[in-house]
Image (cartoon, rainbow, N blue to C red):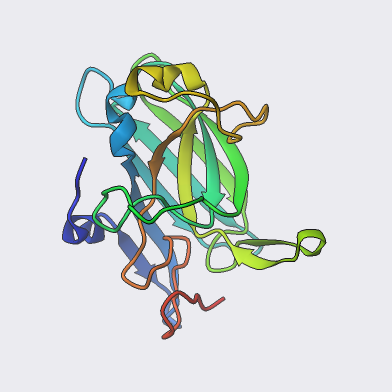
Length: 200
């Protein structure tokens, strides 16, 4: 599935506080083109709408899926890097997703719809670090969902497993966010003037 950068931009809605900082955003995840047919239900193109709202102590993320295959299970992660370009096409230079945080399960119903909500630190500040492996503070500004069951993607050519569920035997990435013009994921609502850097 291809989306132009202009269309992807139109899929994002931002809310600005009186002080000028963006405090809420709505964006769409884009289906991984390689696995679109394994994701799609009988009616319409799969969609994943994500709304993120900043809070005083932590933030709220809500995801709503539509038009996926009935009863599919997914695992939602916040991640360092996306495998898609801003156009929605696969990034030919992609290597790994980088740092990833398991956030919630997402379960489609018999009609191919799903909803999930998490409360955690997200807006502009989500990060992890591990001095044991020399990992400095690293942001995970992208959002993605993975097939929980790898068998659901075998018809699309997937073999093996990925570590993107609690048992570390998940399938491939199903849908994911795309980078902004500043090269950041959508959980950075307030980018700095330096490309690739967020203002916490």
